[in-house]
Length: 260
Ligand SMILES: [Zn+2]
Ligand SMILES: [Zn+2]
Image 1: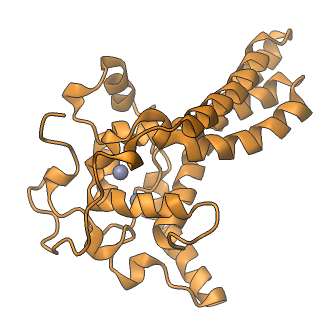
Image 2 (image 1 turned 90 degrees about the vertical axis):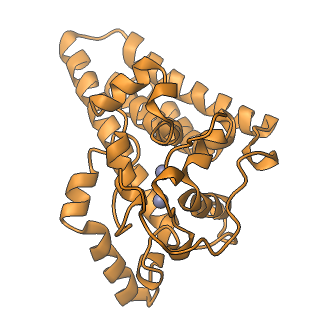
């Protein structure tokens, strides 16, 4: 890890690492509990619906694809909120603001309480999963896809936070899952916080980052958006998808170095 990533000074107040914004509220906890229940329902139906071995194999494959899709969607969503909109954007304004703060002081995400970090995704997943559960609850293959894709997207925020926790502080099982690429590797996600700040958007397994970055898929989409709507992404005007001058300035910003 290089010691100096960008000499540009921080030009705005860094996010607080303590205080009300990092705390879980009962609304956050209820959102995560409801989201988790919908995911558990899908997975239970996928596992326990009586069926034949052929359908069980298809259910496994559907779950695998669900996890792949969760990573891809995490990247598309992350790219969108890093580059477009602001704090006043309906529905996701607070998330856009939080991600701007995340690029200023990446390890601050590790100080957010669990439900505070997951509640936005939990509500989105609930809105998507409940109708799917109602329509396809008797189809274990669809339930396998929905349960794993929904779970991956919902818990992606926690997987992202783990990418910023020093490995010595992580449970061994999380480190092992990072090492095998089930959870996004820390080195993989670090690229998102390093110059040129235009890739590494996928934060579940990170498996899509290589292809999306190599073929400059997001840059292509940014050109299409600009051509159609005349809107430039933050990555063009500020030289950094995470907010230009608000980006992490030293390697120490990536991981927390002081004791909690
Ligand atoms: Zn990050
Ligand atoms: Zn970002």
